[in-house]
Length: 272
Image (tube, rainbow, N blue to C red; front, side):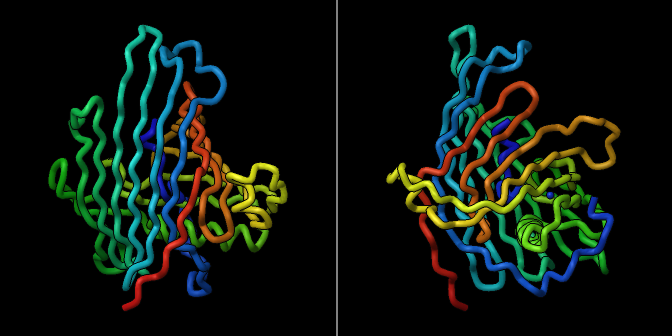
């Protein structure tokens, strides 16, 4: 499940049956480095043998000359009812051009320090005429044509924040983030009412975000072209207007894992 934590958000983490709306009116994302503590919420499903989940995630979203880089590293420990512990390490690094003309991606997943077969993924997205193609180098060389109107992760985050600011409640799109070999993903996003954090009783965390506005958003993720009614997984986030995720919950149908923001370092945009 932790390999589903994507920065189309990041996450970010997304039916682009429509052309991308006016992205020239750019949303201003805040470059940042965020540190999260991961923990299991509630009780797992009856069919699950996981009794607890603990971990950390570091997410860096940085503005560089000509584009954006994203680096994410998750460390997860799964505690099972037979008293065994499984350590999962997931890494994700991308570069996305400002104009969406290119995208480089590199991701891996290890369990107990062993690299999983097919989970060392590397490649890039390039334009072929008016369309985009994903050119995979690992785990094997292959080319995947991406649907017309597909969004890359930073594009999706900006478009989502713009839609939220304009009062939209639903935001269905197709996104490619390079975290799997299955190509693009259909993500239906539900946007809640804008909120402002005012509680500063918890000086260690809340004060940093006092007065900051955010939207509760829920992502339902489906395999592209699938016929399943239920999503593969869902993610809910508290997404600030500058793109920083205050909190998120990932639900894969068997367990729910919450990521709570411990601290965030604001980064400067790199000059060209």
